[in-house]
Image: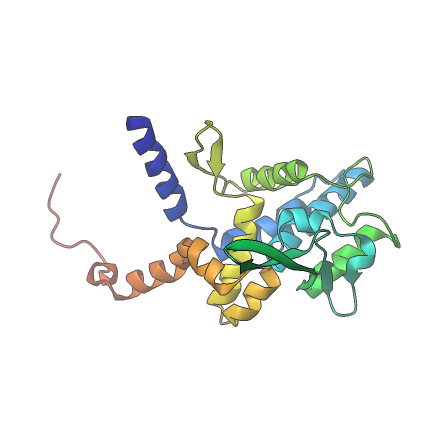
Length: 245
């Protein structure tokens, strides 16, 4: 009983924990630029790839598994877009006589978008390469999700924003900065800055209802701004009348 309650408490705490701020995300995107003055050609390439990876996660709202499936021909440099493919598509069902019946499988392809700076970095990173996986490991193979998580975690620790925010049932640490958290933050920050929520949901590959159900912690920055602006104690300029020793 106690373990069950602790598990529920941990899950609630993780869901309510604040998301990443804009400043944290922007700083994280530029963290790979911190290179030693005598960096080798390989180090330059690796840090360039790492910055592109982080910028694409934050900037496109794509899931990390989707980004790592992207091949070079899927990248459109003219319109700064990337075609996201789903090999199996999405199955459509209807209920017939109380049973679920498969109707069709529709394509789940969609476009996501990146900024001009990322385009320039991509051109430099690819060095004319026209085929193969977009994001590759040091061995030239398609980067794995686990490797991507390690890269994001490394730079989050480098700029000292990584935090443990709870533990899963198996004891694994839940961290503030992950690929998923970075993706969610990108969509949330775009919404807060005035974007159409339906449009950002389509780009992210889900619905507004999904956004409302699972992104509830997304108002952290706005809530903080409102409270700090309007609460009487927040308007105090100094602590007056304190005479303690």
